[in-house]
Length: 195
Image 1 (cartoon, helix red, strand yellow):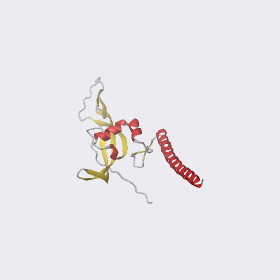
Image 2: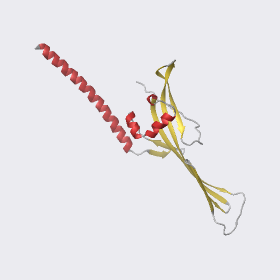
Image 3: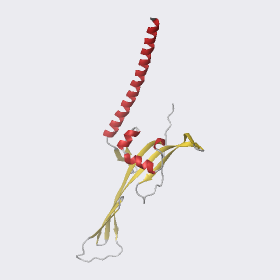
Image 4: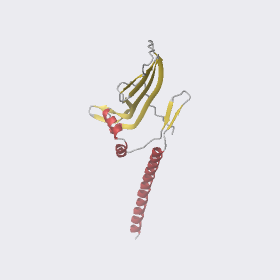
């Protein structure tokens, strides 16, 4: 009888441990999904700092691979096009940039002819649009530039012959959609917290 009670007690303790672990993992999953919902429902905070630079703050989405395939398949294709294996990817970032400004430049030759209509021009490609109007002695232009910056952070494994293991380094790859654009500077910083 004592032996049966010991077995029942061991089974009950094992069941409690298993249920405790499942409860913990379900609580973590619930917290992750709640944070994702809050991020998706909140608006991006965009403002200009004291230097006049545009600053954007957005919450972090923590997605599993199957969720990312549903959420943003285009971003996964970008990672693949960069030649990076998806299993080595640490994080992904997507930033769209738009530059818009208007200027007016006086013409060097003056052809003031009464009754001459205002002349205009429009030039565009997938990333840029330039509109202009020529009036008497000046030209007024409006330029709009839209581009997409793709960032992928991934780990580089140690290599020896055909073996790969561990993590040798963490790197970031950045690409722009506009082929005429050039990346001047990029930086990736990870803050290590004291334990």
